[in-house]
Image (cartoon, rainbow, N blue to C red):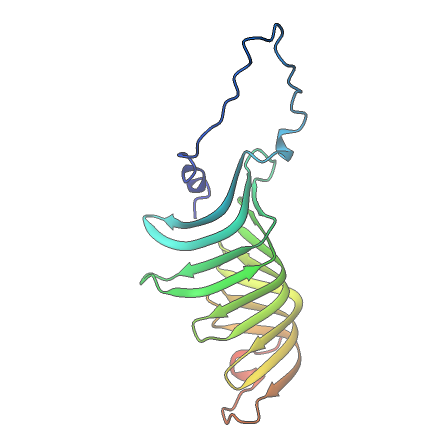
Length: 198
């Protein structure tokens, strides 16, 4: 994904210019910006937008606040009030949905970091819950070293750390802590089926 495509989404945002008053004899002094890297160059609120790559819609983002720090040494986007991310496949069906209380996207490595009540759902309806999640777009990989709870059709799996493809359909739990089957289901659910250990 080309990150600078995002800046073009806001070209139409109105710019407000405050003209100096005609009655003032001396112009107001403006403090020099000491650190431009620490200032957001672009800020948007109540955002819902899609991101395309090579003319194909890849993602949809919804967030209360979106700040872009493209002057920083390592440019990034910040979502201080949380985010909802949806990934589309080539047929424009949703491959995966992820949300979190906080998110940050680091442009150069193309890595998303989501923190706080991170919740994800894949195409099979499996639900993933963790306090911390990383999504490496370049490597097409999702991973975490934190506790993970996966709710499946016939069981709940709990473990520490996991790794997955970016559609979250093939995953490995690093340190399984337990599998808790539902008594009213007969499906044979095991760690070896979808969640091989290291």
